[in-house]
Image 1 (cartoon, rainbow, N blue to C red):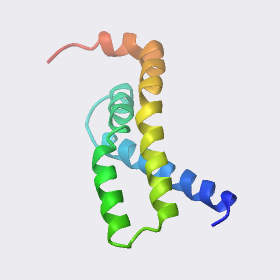
Image 2 (image 1 turned 90 degrees about the vertical axis):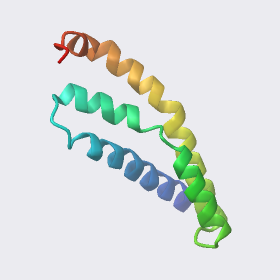
Image 3 (image 1 turned 180 degrees about the horizontal axis):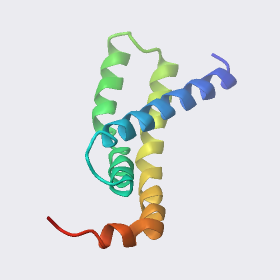
Image 4 (image 1 turned 45 degrees about the vertical axis):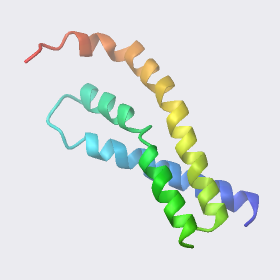
Length: 102
């Protein structure tokens, strides 16, 4: 697999991973701000992904290149999400703080 194809697949896996987490957050009955905060908070949940990636590699479902791409995506989502959450709360935290507790 050439480098260009590898990074293209890496980008696709990353987009699917992030969009899937946000899709789940959009199903709750809250404001868009809260939905977005929940979506961002769900992105770094990669420990289950690590287990399934390893099972796929060991069973021969994933090639070593696909496995490496999945590990990179899991690492990126784990490392980038706290920065995204900090930026989101810096910009919209006042909306979350002003919400009435129920």
